[in-house]
Structure formats: C-alpha cells, structure tokens
Length: 292
Image (spheres, rainbow, N blue to C red):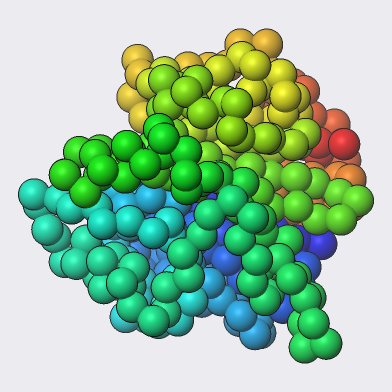
C-alpha cells in the first residue's frame, strides 16, 4: 500500500508520496504562516520510519517553492531533484534564494527524461525503487531549450516543468506535469511519450492555459483527473472525464491498495458519483473507491 496526497494550499501545488518502499517523496511546496506548521507536522509524521526522503521541484515558480525555507528548517532537504536551469526572478525572496542554493548545491540531482538513480527508480540489496520516473524534459528539444532561455531572462519558468510518473507494479500510475502550458505541450507532442495513466494531476492547477491537448489525453486515457486550486473562471473542467476539483474538495488523499484507490478529501460535504462505495475509514471523509 502507498499514499499519494495532494495538499490544499491555495493557488499553488504541494504533494507527497508515502511509498510502499523505504521512501518518502515531497513534490513542490507552497506553504504560508497559516498552514506551514500543520502541513510540516504532517510531513514529519508521515515520513517517520522512512530511510530516504527526497524533494522534487517540478519548476522554479513561487507557488511551487513557497515556504521552502521553513520546510528545510524543520525537515532538512538532503536530496533535491530539479531540472538543470539558470532561472532568474526580479523578486528574489528568501524562498527563491533557498531554491537557487539547493539547485546549485551538491544536494541537487538534475532530472531529465530517463534519469536513473538509486532509490528513485532503481533498487539494490539495500532498498527497493520508489517507482518514480522522469518522462520529460528532453534536453535537446528546441522548444525546451528556448524555455530555459526564457526562464534565465526572468520570464515564466512554467515550460521548464518536468513530467513525473509514479507507478506501483501491477497497480496504479500517477502523473504530474507541473505548470506546462497548452501551446508548449502542442509543440513537444512528437517528443514526449506518455503512458496509460490512472490518476492525472492537471497541469497549471487545471487552468485553461494548461489544458492538455486532446491527442495527449487520448494517449493517457486517465481514469481520474484532479484539478487544482485557482479561481473557477480560469479552470478547465475536462468535460467527459472523471474529475475531482480541489477548490471544493480540499486535500485529496489517495490510498492505493493494489488495483484499488480509496479516496478521501478534507471537505465533509464533497461527493462524486463515479466511485464505488466500499465503506473505508482509514481517514476522514471517504468519498469512494476507484477500481482499476
């Protein structure tokens, strides 16, 4: 069994994976004075007993590394994964300075398509793989190279986002696309190969600007799309697909048990009609089970 949780952090992203191996993974960070203690307390509690804890940064935008100074002060980051970049910002906050320090340090492992590392996606006699694979970037892609130049010149870093896959053997496949934008995904579609996906976190928090092109959706055939938090006027609701919208649901916890995903949310009034009822109670506010 493993747990994937998407934390409700407002206009931003933050996730963790409590693996069914000796690993714990945090993907992105967006915490503030109101929620940082509660969230980091949870991360410390849930990662207790795991031999490896890693932080993966999809891309260097403030709503994906906000609060990293506080996180690092309580859970020192010793395994930092990010795309190799020289992104700059006019507003160099303490959190951005910390991101750059980690990015450029010996703690950093720069990710690209096919990256392999113990115990991210390789195993040995010490511990098993965490099941995390990097599907993008292809670093010699011309559109990606231009996105790196744009980020270095202080423009949006959205399109240097990594595509990250988490999969459990004979079970679930989960996919993150950071804040990739629609036009960019159209441009790279011939250079990116996406698998069948069971659970997909919509890029750019589900905004219309990050709507996944139809050919890529058809390639992935997601069973569930989780739409992040943003003003509703900016969201694309992916009609025709099963969705959970975090604006209403709050935290989303995926309790993965073989080919079953038991789903919990933090809102006690949220419900959907496409999940099976299996009367689970590991956490509060069970809304149903996705049978794969």
